[in-house]
Length: 313
Image (cartoon, rainbow, N blue to C red; front, side, top):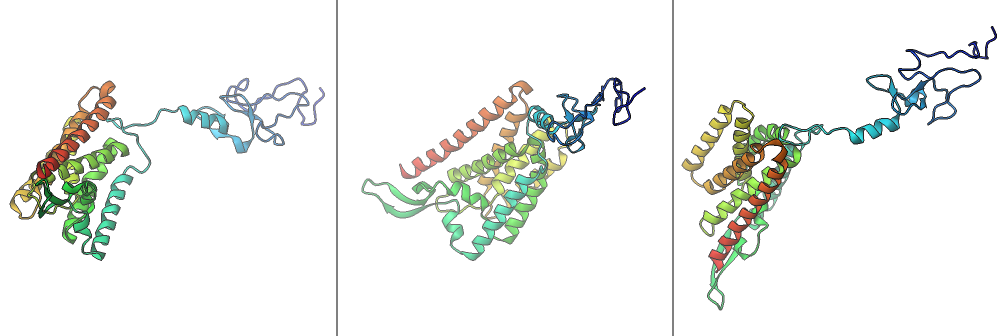
């Protein structure tokens, strides 16, 4: 029997492994040396199990059966179902990135405060009467009542002293990391800021004019409330977070110079959002999460506008 240059019978198909090339092997034919479709100068004795094109060792990507080429792997990744949490959040490789970013921003803002003694008064939450009135008899205020609504946000990243920021950042780390894993990054960030705005809005509404409120406590109390509600929904042991909320509320109402309005406002906002996000049926959950977030934002805006009108109207 004659043979070709490689020593194989000219009419015989030789499979590298498997039967009839079922695992991607390229049948060997007389006088034909298969080459990689991506690297035409390289021999290729294996085919991609998806597109059936010959691929060289550099293009072979292991699959559950045989090998795939880089193009098929890319196409498969585009259509691959995204892994999500039980509450619909996207699972990302670094599931605490938002928590650590928020901690970093708070620390940077605190360092800026230390370098500028007036910074906290310029960006803290306040509506201070100036003791004068306009020609129409309207009392003049500085701060939020004068249109400085950015204070509702900036006050959330300011702290009075070292102990204040240390306690808040510890609490943010303890409850923020597990919540971010449960909700996904986007939902966690929305929860944090809406809780913080809820605390700022209630403090603006109920605190005495001229008082100064700062701190991330409103947002963190919102995380407390959300973790309690979500833990109950997912049948976790909620006694530790319940105890933590109870102790912090006790401190809130027994220690002087603590903004109970900010704490309660954040707690209510966070718990309400978590309930609206977790309890609807799965097929309606995304719509419920979006609509409840919008409703909460509108409610906060209404409170702020109404308070400004009551002070200046």
